[in-house]
Length: 415
Image (cartoon, rainbow, N blue to C red; front, top):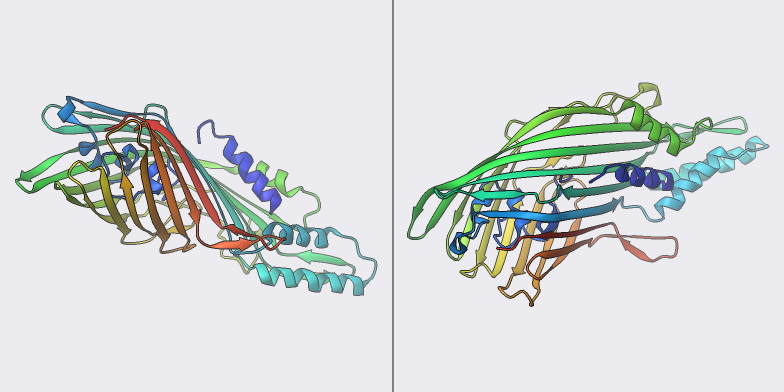
């Protein structure tokens, strides 16, 4: 598993700038809910209606844009203690030379005992994302329409152990256990439009639509642990470079938000057309019979609906936001996401008092991980956010480590 982690990190580093990993909010949006917050530019990337409220026309502004970032990185691991050491121990047991059948049988029992404790939950997942500099750009016209151009690129790499059976052949051990690794890179260019649909003394209804052009590159590799002719890391890297598949598709998002002085309610329908992308194929002979890995693998961006609600002070300095994904969807490496989020934020009007935000985020599907999230804004523009999983695993010394963590930093224009 150490090899897979190294391979995954090297794959991410090959991206010159690593669009939002699918189903992972970017920047301060990871701390905040999906409710559009005019004080946080990154929340304009969720609901397509959000850009309309991101420009402060009271100060005769027509533009708002990012400057650098946000750059976000994350790591997630399976619910297995001492994962690296246990995976390395299995590989060493299989590669060792045994002089007698009895000695091989003892090693076999030990290896299968480790495998039974790992199962298919042994994985490491890395992600990185960044907005193209100066993106997104929002332009609000004089007749109350707002255009947004967005460009970003992301990369996700996941490696896991497919736990099969180890058998004995004389003094040798034969394993059906394999390393399985996946990568996904997404170059995303989005163009959106939002405007006021209806307005009265109590508030305003804003609607929006956005088209996202995705160029997604998917790679898969599978290496058996008993293949002594290949180094696992080199074999996986070669498979990605030789067999990776790229395809292009367009996802359509629709959104609406009712904005009042002290509250707002929103609805987002993402990928209503469910675009499909080509996946890389695998040699069926290398796939353990007990695994659920298929020889062909297409990726479909499934439609997801999200509802959000927020209450705030009139100037939006203090906001309590909540959002909930009504259904689960899979990301480009097959993991399910359905976020439930609550957050509290303070964005003052002074350049010298930091903005503060904190929240709780839980994936209601897939890993079911929950996160405590925190963020600071300095000089109204520099945003730093950190999320730490509340679930932990133990290392070889008995110390507990969070199963996941995310970090983001970015600099953008203020409201």
